[in-house]
Length: 323
Image 1 (cartoon, helix red, strand yellow):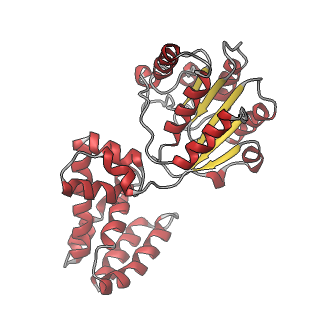
Image 2 (image 1 turned 45 degrees about the vertical axis):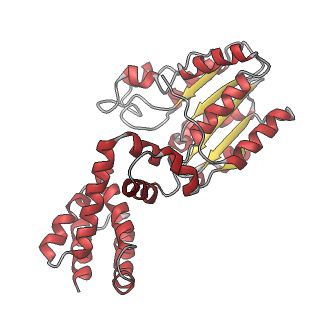
């Protein structure tokens, strides 16, 4: 079941959307843009619930909310988590996040193996969008539309140009610059920004030490704060990576520094975590060392994003920090 979370922060964005409802000026497509874990999808679900329960009694509104949480509302279409071969094939899990059929992905070699929205995904979605609606509004939520392949984006653009009557698209993106300008121009853009620490604190029930660490790591993203607060194992893992990053800057010999950088030899979630914690712990160093090492670290990051020899980059960083 898709548990609808309480919205944290974003009062300006909520006010804008509520005003659209109040004056009956609903756009056919909204694009929520901002970095990951800010709560864009949470706000999208909130807006969908408002539209789909408009004019109903409180008892009927509760039924709407329950059907949205179960993704069983007939006027709600959600494309979120994707079936990915040998990585995400749990249909029960997928049904908690997407209610658009993905059976076709198990029969295709591409994009079934990736977290990419392909032309077949859009075709299946389009078939559902032209079903007869039961209410005034129907809502289609798509997370991270930058995942669309070019052919899928072009097909989706045609739907945006001539949308079915009463259909409202609620789209999110973490990479607005990668989207087709024509696609952006056909949506109403609402930007999302990092939340204040005061907004995040009510999410946490940890000790003062853990609260400070979580807030520092979340950097204004409610999703990160909530996940770390709810998942002790994930919090412990983050502390371990943070400790390893701190040890790197404090290490006195080259062998130890290279050992601590070993996770960066492979790209993936672990390397991304270490890069983040290296940046966070670098900020904690004394000004003289921070100024000296920042240039080396920035140079390393620029090379790391390219196809440069990773081992040589790690060795150079470890040597420069030791000088």
